[in-house]
Image 1: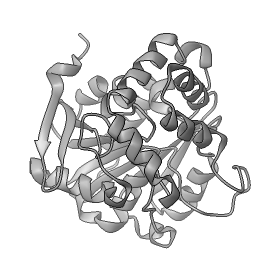
Image 2 (image 1 turned 120 degrees about the vertical axis):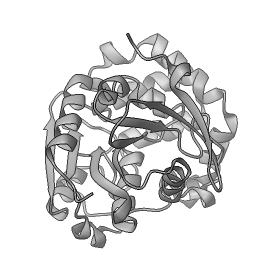
Image 3 (image 1 turned 180 degrees about the vertical axis):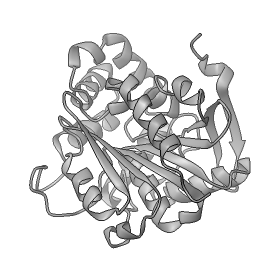
Image 4 (image 1 turned 135 degrees about the horizontal axis):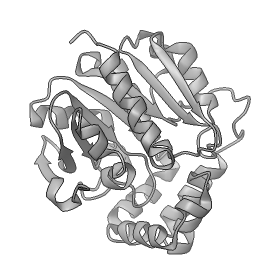
Amino acid sequence: MALDKEQIARTVKTRDWTLRYYEAGSGRPLVLLHGSGPGATGWSNFSGNIEALAEHFHVYAVDMPGWGESDPATVDRLDHVDAAIQFLDALGIERAAFVGNSMGGQTSLRLATEHPGRISHLVTMGPPVGRMPSLFGAGGGPSEGLKVLIEAYRDASPENMRRLVEIMCYDKARFATPELCDARSQAALARPEHLANYVAGLPQGAPLPRWVDPALLPGITVPTLLIHGRDDRVVSFESSLFLLANIPDSRLVLLNRCGHWAMIEHAEEFNRLVIDFVRGNPSDD
């Protein structure tokens, strides 16, 4: 039986934030961190993964500050690594596997470099790495996908959500349904303060005002799985090639016919990859 969103929804008060999260399963803690984008939440990014992963792990899918049902955050307070550590502390979790899509992947990378004792495994899907020379990706500014994402923050209409979902996925016909686009629009418009804070922060470098320091990547010692869509129009797969070259204990799965949302477009394969990776690669905890 499919998990019920409301039945697994929880709220926790950390030192600085009230955070919404979705919890299921038992055993090794596994934290799922969503990407950016209007209407993005722990549930919208990972509703097709939580149940399968919860058969093997204690799963927590978090709405980070500035997204979903969690507290709003202006860009000057947008430190998701600190928020993730506060989340672990509030729930009494010493160490967890982290699985992050896009912005959530960037957060997980930073956490692995800045708080190595709090992470046992690192899984990323399409994380931006920051300002680096690009051979394959867009040059001279945001990617095609990020431009659409920013426009959807300025106007979270169903039409702009359709454009956003279409550019996130390879299979537009399957995933950019009117129902999904309307739902994402309604979710975004329900929290206008999140939209306003994001747009106000654009001149300061949103959506990621704090990037991982590339010089620290070789110091990541935890087992690392990099998953990327070959057809990603938001963050080029070149970013994961860079990570593969710099993180010693890493491996890369590059998926054809896959855009920015590997966990949605290839949910069953994604679930198998994560389960096998975390179970099959012991950490030193």
